[in-house]
Length: 434
Image 1 (cartoon, rainbow, N blue to C red):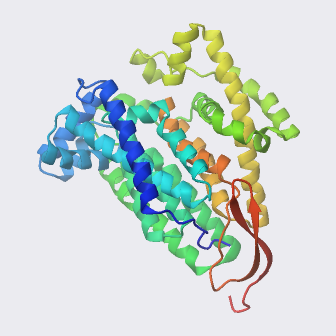
Image 2 (cartoon, rainbow, N blue to C red; image 1 turned 45 degrees about the horizontal axis):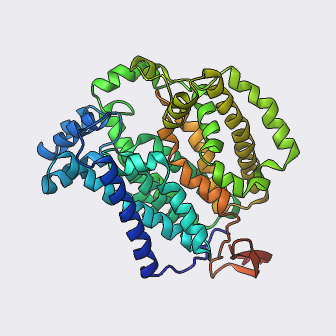
């Protein structure tokens, strides 16, 4: 029915314990890697931009011409932090650690509110926090962690029916990384479908919130004259931006299984027991050999022969291009079964009017796969925002919905796996005047 969801209470002592574990993890990481080590990779040009935003007067010209491909919000935040704590690598990296710890605590709190099992919530939080890319993003000066925090906030806002917070989190996510518009599109489609199905006034407020969240990015795109700032990088990648890359789609579908393998192992019957879907995946997987996983043109020009950490690790371990393609092909086949099941679930929910949180998660996954392959660069790191969505979708369904007081609905409470409970609708009676 689209009301406020049932939520388990989470005590401050529990959150403090999780926060302490996250701080200990980051402290160990900083000690092992070295928080003061010289800048590396993209950190070098990110710090240059942070210095611009931290030392120059804020102006429309600065917003228009800074030399990055992503939004200005993280550079504004790091620039403000730099004015307070300094622009040395260790000072800026400390902010990355703070953002990461906050992200993990918020993520755990959300998961814990969805299950009566602390172990399941802690496992879902640890799975995200211990991912090699998250370890990397949590220490170094990158913009991705802040965007992932905003996405988790948007998931919470949808689940808890908070339109104002939804507008804030969606806006912040898109101003971090423009491709996070996939979350804006999925939220808009979710509430539009819900309004079309039920014609309830509260869905209009959510639609207005989604629309409002897109206005700042739209204004920036008008100022930029495109989807990114008017800098040197825009002119370098201008020819690549408008093309849908099927090889990117193949990569991200492959990662949907390869990156989520331990989670899928816990719910394998839900995704690999439907014979027709598995047979479809086996047949359609031949597409892989027409669009195999390979570095994008811009990566090749930069001398990068792989598509991310997993690809690089397998290459170093096996040193065989055939083995790499076999791995990604197997991942693509399994990913087709997972994504295919999600698409079918979304279609079924649409037909039967079950426009719930699970439908929103389905849409988010589909929108990501529709938006991301337009990027000039496909890279494993760009898949990370979808990992928390898939954790929710695979481990924490079915989701229960608490109906609003003005909806006259009879329900019963039933126990489902992992000590969770669901509200099963028995009979719905809508007031005649609505």
